[in-house]
Length: 403
Image (cartoon, rainbow, N blue to C red; front, side, top):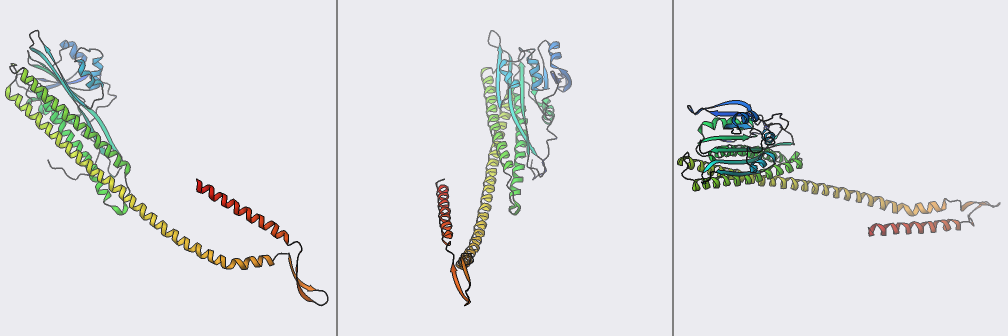
């Protein structure tokens, strides 16, 4: 499906997240299969009630949350394998595991398998610089009873968007192979991963479009840093998801190689599931390459932002240097003018002191110069003061140079 240049980012209305404070004590949405028609019918219940009725033998397709299962694990720790508990109680990037229950002859009685995928979705408000994100840990647990060909399939933490897609697939999944559920789940996860990368790509596109406006460009370094972090997280998530699917493919081949004659396994179902898992793995790798390309595009924008800032700083430095040159020229002019008038000012200051007298003497009226006998006081005060001032200025200059 073609992707358009949609920059109207908004909160993920179609991605309804399970709230941490959800007060569910084991609430389940159960889909049970009608053996006559093959269709599924849903009902609501609690895990406690189902375990009480079925005697720890829960069957059907179940949608619930990790919090609900965690609450029940404290009450009934023998329901699920201990290796599955970290999927419910820990913060994992992704994982896969399985466990066989056999009779005394080595024949498989029950097969448990589970897989977990991390998901990070982001969104950004129009014209904003803040990128919001939400983490989700999506998991599936499949229990296949070989003697009765009955199954428990449990999906954990699925948003409504993903639930809706999985509900439409229930009737088409090959029940003869327990890994068919993993294949269907992983393929839906791949689609969400793809959308998550397109969300990232939309914000990167907006950054690129913004930085083309060089005249009014203001670097959004916080946004650039946040986007680099989100892209790095998604690359890690995709790497782990690809490894998880490879583990599922390997375990399916082990089950097929060691137990090719299991009565309810259909050969062509196994091949279709294997092909679906392979194509999903290939799709996730392609999504990862798109994520790497986004990282490179974002790095180009970060480099551009730094180069533009450096260029503007250089231009500002040049302008400051030109202003300093003009100021220096003006100060030089002032200094020259001051030097021209300094001798006259000094002379007028000397002769303007009371040490000198020019007046008529005696009856002759002849004007004569007279110098006070105390004129030496001027030099006694002026010379030491000048020397001390020069010495203090020289000492301060040497101290600043040493620092």
